[in-house]
Structure formats: C-alpha cells, structure tokens
Length: 238
Ligand SMILES: [Zn+2]
Image (cartoon, rainbow, N blue to C red; front, side, top):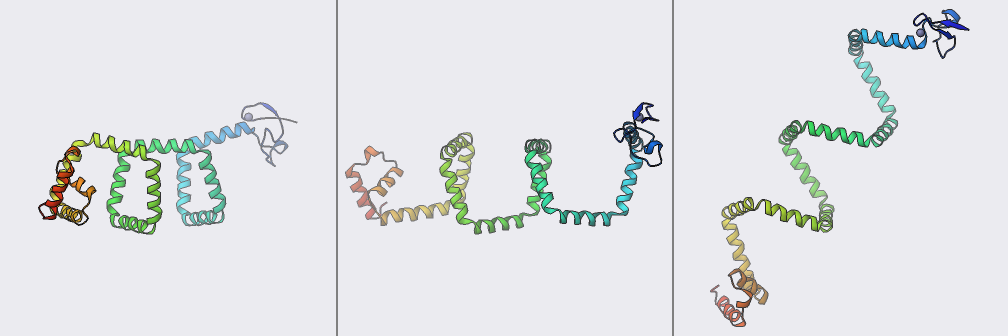
C-alpha cells in the first residue's frame, strides 16, 4: 500500500516507519508523513514560542504545590537511582565539568572573592567556633598529618621558605622591628629567664652560645676566656 503525504506530496509505503497511526485516517494512518509532522511541530513551536512559554509558566504557577510535591516524592522514591546517575554523570564528564568550573571561576573571580569575603564577615563567629571545635576534636590527627606532610615535602617547603624570605626581605625586617618594639617587655623577660636558666644549668655548650651572642668568634673562645667568663657569671656580672 502506498500513501501520498499531504505535506511533501511524496508517495510513501503506508507503514509505521513513514506515518503515525490515526485510526480515522486513510489506511489508519495520519495524512502527513512523520518527517513532515516533525517539521510542522518544530515550526509550530518556533512560531508560538512566547505563547507556549506563557502557557507553561501559567500551568506551573497554578499547579506549583502539586508539582513540587510530586517532584519531592519522586526524588524521595528514587534517591539511590538519582545519586547513582549523578555520580556516573560526574565521572563521565569529569574533564568537561572541571573545565566549566575553572572557566566560571576565572570569569567571576572578583564577584566570587567579594561573595566569599562577605560570607566570612557575616559568619565570622560561627566559622571561628567551628574551626576551633574541629581542631580540638581532631588535634592528634591534624598533628600527625602535619608532621607527615612536613617530612614528605621538606625540600619543597625549605625552597619556598627561602624564596619567600628573599622576596620579602624588607617587609620581614620591618615586621620584626615592629614586633620587637611592641613586645619589648615580653622579650626582655624571656631573655632574662633564658639567661637565668643558663646560669642555673651552666655548662660549656650554653656558655659558648652566650659568648657567640656577645660577639666572640670560635677562635676567641679560649679556655682562659671561658674560665674568666664562668667566674664573671658566677659572681653575677653577666
Ligand atoms: Zn511528508
């Protein structure tokens, strides 16, 4: 059986490959072929875009509660399936998703930084508390992790430190000076305690450190000098 499409006027075999079933149509098929039907539907959608969008919007508004309920129920009932599907999708599209994320971060850098800063400011107390609590609860784990990290990255960390020092020499010197001025009393107390301990635990090693601090070179630290220093320290003329 051959049927002529009323759209493209082609003569096509009257089968479900070419025509949709319409019980009232000729041979029980639709007047237009599947291809023409699809084209017609597409054209109709394009021409009525705004009207159809408005219709969808209206329908959504009128049935919001029902739709949300249905959606929630569907998610509840298909949780595992949906999670699996999501995980699979993330795995299969890892590169694309990473690229998208990077691109988004690049393009929205300033906006994201602003948002982050605002969030931190507004939630400072909560965030500080959370951090403290986390550190308290995971002290041992964190210390272990830190020690392991330092051991495994010793060379890299040393290099970074050196590089940072080189690049920030002036800033660091300024900071040190400021710190010393601000903490004068504390530092003086610390040194007093330090020398007190040296005096109490006097031995060759401490004395050498002390002499070094006072500007003696190794060659100058003769047994006579050390002997003299010992007498001076013991008579409290440090
Ligand atoms: Zn056709």
